Image: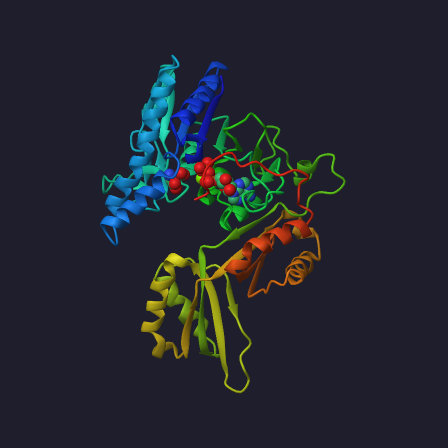
Length: 434
Ligand code: ADP
Ligand code: ASP
Ligand code: MG
C-alpha cells in the first residue's frame, strides 16, 4: 500500500462544487488502495479577503490575531472537504495544523516548521480514514499560539507531511497542468515542463513563479521528497520536481533525461517575473573601504532580505559613488528610516526609493555549459525597446531589473527569443490569480 500526500490549492476548492469534485478525486485515490493524506488551502480568495477585513478594522493588525484570523480560512475548507468525503461513504477526518503536529517557531506570519509529530494522523490512517489537514498553519510550543507559514504556505504543509509520514509521493494540485516555462496567465504560449530539477525550481520560485512556494521546494529538496505538480481539473500528467543528486530509486540522475528524445538538452528551464520588489539607491557614498560594510550592516539590522546589489564606478572628480539594491517593497520604509538615521555617520549624500521596478529571471542548469545566454537575453530586450537597469547572475540564473510596466512584454519577448513558445495555448482552469 502506498501513502500519497495530496495538496489542493485555493483555486481547486473555491466553491461547493469544486470541493465535491476534489472529494471524488481523493476517494478514487483511496479506492485504488492507497493511504491518503490531504493538505488543503483556504477556499478561493479567502485569505486575501480576510487580510482586507483585518486592515479595515486595524491599520496595523496585531500579528498574533492575524494568524488566528488567517488560519480560520483553512479550517473552513478542511471541514467541508471531510464532510464531502464522508457523504461519498468514506471515513474522513480533518485536523488543524496543531492537531496534526505541525510545530513551528514563534514568528507570526512567517513561521518555520521545526518539527512534525503526526501521531494523530498515523492513528487515523491506521483506522482506515482519509486524513485532511489544514494547510499553512502550525503551533508554537513556547507561546502556545497558532502560527501561519507565510503566503502559499500550504505547499510547505504538504511537503512536511510527506517527509514526516515517509510518503511515496507528494502531489500538488493546482489550476494549471503543471510547471510551465513562464506564468501561463501572462504567456499563453508557455510550454509545460515534464521534469525539472529542484535546483531550477528553487530559482524560479525565488524569482516570482508562485506555482510552488520556495520554502516547500527547499523542504522537499532537503528531505528527499519528490513533487508532482498537476491540475485538479483533469488527469493529465503534470511536472515532476526531482533532485538529480539522488540517484537511487530510479530517479533520473541527469538533466539530459528530461529531454529524452530531444536532439539537444533544453538550456533554459523557464522565465519568472517579480513585481514585489523596490530599489533603494544610496547616492553619493564616499568611495573608500568600509562604506558598503557600514551600509549593509545598517540594512541587515532591520532584518530586510536584500536581493540584487549594484555599485557604480565612482566619479573621479568627486570620489563619490552610488550603491543600489533591491528588496521586498514591504521592507522598503523600514530600511529607508534606518539609513536616514545614520546618514551623517556614513556620510552619503541622499537616498532614492523606486517601487516601480520589475525583475525578470531566466533560469536553466544548461547555462553552466552554454555561452552567449546573456547576449541573447540583452539583445531580445533591446529589440523590444526595453531598458535594463540592473543585472545579476548566478550559475544557473540571469536576472535583470526593468520598469514595472514593461515586465510582461519583457517576459514574452524573452520567452520567444529562447525558443520556449509552445504550439498551443496553455489552459488556466480557475482562480483569479490574485
Ligand atoms: P494554488 O491556489 O493552487 O496554490 P497558485 O495561484 O498559488 O495556486 O499557483 C498557481 C498559479 O501560479 C497559476 O495559476 C499560474 O498563474 C501561476 N504561475 C506562475 N508562474 C508559473 C509557472 N512557471 N508555471 C505554472 N504556473 C505559474
Ligand atoms: N491560504 C494561504 C494563502 O493564500 C496559504 C496557501 O494557499 O497556500 O497564501
Ligand atoms: Mg499556491
